[in-house]
Image 1 (cartoon, one colour):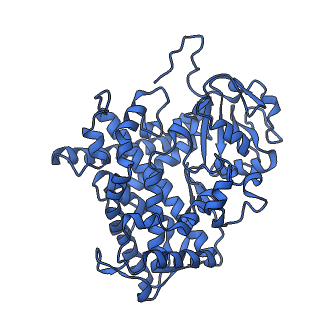
Image 2 (cartoon, one colour):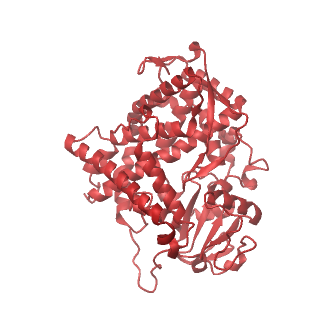
Image 3 (cartoon, helix red, strand yellow):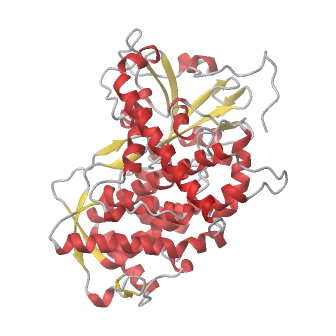
Length: 495
């Protein structure tokens, strides 16, 4: 429910700089050599704002600020600060500049809606049953089918003596998975040599939104005239694709109860209200974009680390062989039994959470962690990759890849709110269990079928388009012996 406010207490509209919300801002450190008007821009790269912030975080400590072209932001990553700002009674999601720049793409969809917008609660209540255990079990067969397309594609690459494009192929996989399970649509991603036009438009729109973060607002129309025209074309393509998809579903009379059916036909259980056609479009775009972009990055980072740590891959592979045995295709319940594989995934998300930050704002005047006064509406960005590297939580070797950090005993010993790859609170990712099941299933299938060879000359580079992805990652594959890779009846080939 939106808060009732008077003119005197209402939050200001638009971007709110740090000075508005932090009365003792002077106590928070910032990078040296701040320039008039330009701010903290020396040594920065507009293509890597997250990695620039990680570098500053290591120098400046668990809370710091950055100013760029008159806009000042507060970042925090210390575990004690992050745990306090996760308190739902005092803080809520803040739709900051980065997310606000996505609103032309997704409007008041689940990810980009402001807290006061009624469509967030309506859509959340209507769609939450679509991620229940029963619903998830229903998606499992389609996930297996798409994974079979991936392994067929990789088998062809292997037979031809080629390496595989990990980020590109994971993007194909996760786009097809969410499109088919959620919306009954086939993009034909594995039948194309180039990314699907929807993916190209999505990447273009996300990249443009990120550029807006680093361009002075008054100069944006002048500096981004050409990019803004391309962005308009990208947005039109996204909208057109989704409108065609919805139109086809309406014409067919309905599907099998997937997310799109819920959006079109399900009324709120208490109010009887339904999602408007415009909001359906926004929710579909939200799920297609967010439902594949982050999971593809998580899988790509996990495969990178498995290729670099053969001893970890061997342990995970042995678990898959032991748990799945000779089963031609694992059942839904068998995926959750891959605890070692899940640890690999969690550790990859610890080091490189593909959604690298989330913003929180104060619901009322408060003091963060007993140290920093905040006014109502004041906000901060929680820098998740640094939270996940806090040595007070993760130890002096926090940069080291070690899936045993997520064995049951270690997880129980850690304080809450120290591992946040899906955000926090009521506005945490609604599809996190979907993503984790899909990613664990796919890693298990790939480990059972292949051994991964890293390029000795490759050094991890991370590309940023609001989400994170390893850049230029290619792997050499070796097919495991037929005895250890049972045949999958769905494809007539090995699983």
